[in-house]
Amino acid sequence: MTISTDSTGPAARDAARAARGPISRADAQLTALILGFFGGMWFNWGQQGAPAGWSGPLLAASLLSFAVAVLGGVNTWRWRRELTTARDRAASRRYGIIVGLSYLVLFVGAIALGRADRPEYIAPWVAFVIGAHFWALIPVLRDRAVLIPLGAVVVAVAGAAVALHAANGVQPSAVTGPGAGLALLVVAVLELLRRRPAA
Image (cartoon, rainbow, N blue to C red):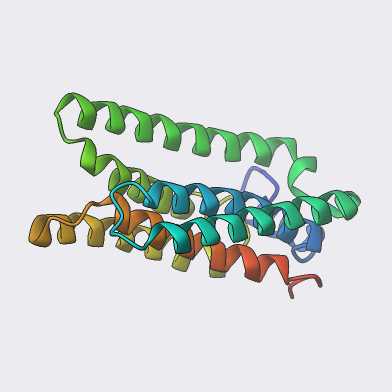
C-alpha cells in the first residue's frame, strides 16, 4: 500500500497518481512490515481467555507474523530508494490525520467500555475501528483491492466475536485475536511476495 499525492481537484489527483506510477516493491514490503507486526500483536491478544490447547498455535502464529514483519523491514531498507509513501508530505499528513483520529476513537471507546464494566468488548471494539480505518484510508492509499476486503474481514471478525459471546459466552478476544491476526498475516505475506510493481 502506498500514499497518493494530495492536490486540489480530482483531475489533478488522477494525473498525479498516473505520474507516480505503480506501487513499488518497497511500499509492499513496508505494508508487510506493518501488518505483520500488528498481526503478531493480535495473535498474542488472542491468548487471553483462549480455550485450552490454543496457546501453542497462537504463539506460533504470532512468531510467524513477527518474522514476516522483520523480513518486510529488511526488504524495505534494501529497496528504500523506491519508497513513495514517505516522500509525499501532503499525503503523509493526511494519512497521519486519519490514523490519529482512528486511534483517538479507539481509545475513547475502550475507556468508555472499561468504565461501563464491559472490558470484554474492548477487543471487538478495537477490531471494528481498525477494520473501518482501512476503509477510511482508501482515498489516500492506492491498494483498494487490499483495503476493501481486509477492512471487511476485520469488521466481520469483530461482529462475530460479539455474536459468539452473546450466544455462547465465548471470550471475544479469543475470536478477534486469531481472526484479525490471520487476516493481517495473510495480507502481510501476500505483500511480502509482491516483489515486482503492480500494474
